[in-house]
Every structure is written in C-alpha cells, then in structure tokens.
Image (cartoon, rainbow, N blue to C red; front, side, top):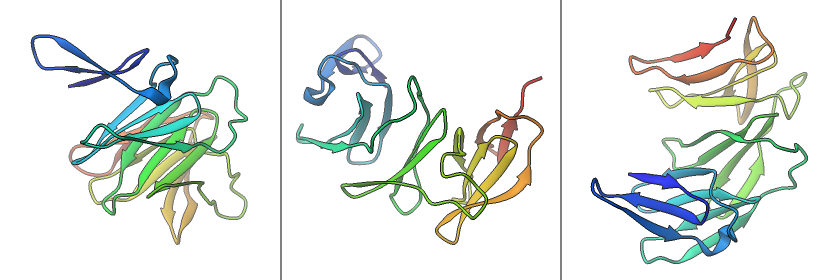
Length: 168
C-alpha cells in the first residue's frame, strides 16, 4: 500500500512504513499517487513525477496553474495507457508518454468545466462540472446530460456505469 507524504511516498508492508523520497517533491509533499503495472506516478508542486522500477524519476512540468488552491479530484489510467488528471476548479489534463495537455471540449462547454472525473467499467471517461455531465468522445468532452447542482462528484460504479453525487 502506498501513501502520499510530505517528502514523497511511503510504502506500508503491513508491519511498517518505508519512506520513498522523491527528489522532485522538494519537500512540498505529494498530493496524489497512481500506481501502474510498471511505474509509480505522483503529483507535487506543479509537476508530475514518474518513478520507474529502477528508481529513476522523470519530471513532467504541468501547464501554468491559474486556479489557486485547487486540488486533484481524479487521477487514473484508461485502457490505452493514457493518464487522466482532474483538478477541482476546472482543469483537466491527459498525459500521454512525456506530454501533458489540457483536454479539449465541445463548443459551448468551457475548457475549464470539469471538477471531477471517472472511468466506467467499459473504459468510457466521464466528467462533471457546473450542472453538466460530459463524456469523452470524438477526442473531446461533449455534454450528455444536465445535472441538478453546480458541483457534483462522480465515481465508477462496480456493477457498471458511474455514480454521481449532487449533495443536498
């Protein structure tokens, strides 16, 4: 089991924690972790860090963050190996290889609409934003339904599809 820590990562083996410092964290801590079959990924101070099995780090610079205090709400890998990273406040990126790009949206949908995202069991990518549910199709997010609240959360449903929480 892995935990994000102030100095990087910590691995828990069921008995004790072992620190796994990341040079790129610069003491600022890691705010999100994603483990794939061959790598560990961490988000820290505006950079994405990929940690290879041999311990080498690759640092990918994030595009300029213009949303103060935003935090990650989703970080996952799709069926093609693309990594998706969504921030509260509307920034959504995909990482392919060593390239990070902000995602495209359909006409009429703000490029910063997304506040949460999830991938369903069939591999479809979904995102929620102010009163909208959108689906990744045709290489962009397209609105598919209106939601009852400005801020909704979304997560994968074990039986298929997604769950959307709209609060009170």
